[in-house]
Image (cartoon, rainbow, N blue to C red; front, side):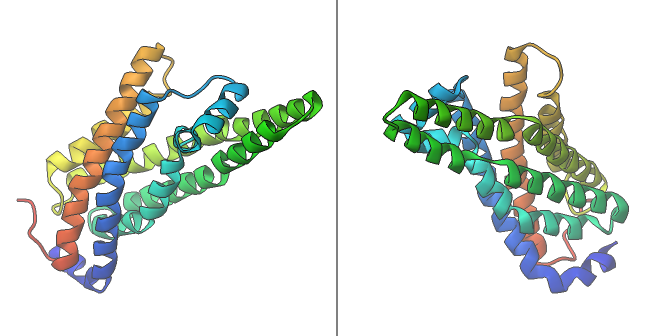
Length: 237
């Protein structure tokens, strides 16, 4: 096992880059979930436009702009995790990596925060009721793209991918069981958000998911940094 990971020594730079991405993504993930708690998402397109008009930064954050940033900076992190877990289970490490990238691509293609921001500005500048109605309809259509099936699909894919990764991590000699268990709890809570449960329980699982996921990123990010310095160890006994 040690020999197999030593063969990845040519990827030390990727381990370090992946570690930096994870260590940045961890705090951002916790901040992201806190945004939803402090500033709940509006329920109508008119309220969304009002939010963007009053504070466009909060509007973008409420439409998960931080999610875009996080997904971009963890691209090398996903690759580094794949390389570190490949000696443990190449097949499942590959499944987790592929599912993660498919889910991330679906999310990035469907996030319409910038479009809603643009439409809110045009709505505020409209001078007739007909123009306002047109921008409201366009805004509702654009908003539905992100808050509809595309977002749900991407979230389930990414959570499933990270859950698989955490389970493989549980068997890996290069990550502690504590780190793996935090990842399992985080991503099971993420998938639990889509169960038919009361809203209060769904919000609770969402907060657990965000906090545990952010903590998990920081924990395995430190380990990736160590592997970037010395891919051969230390290992879990």
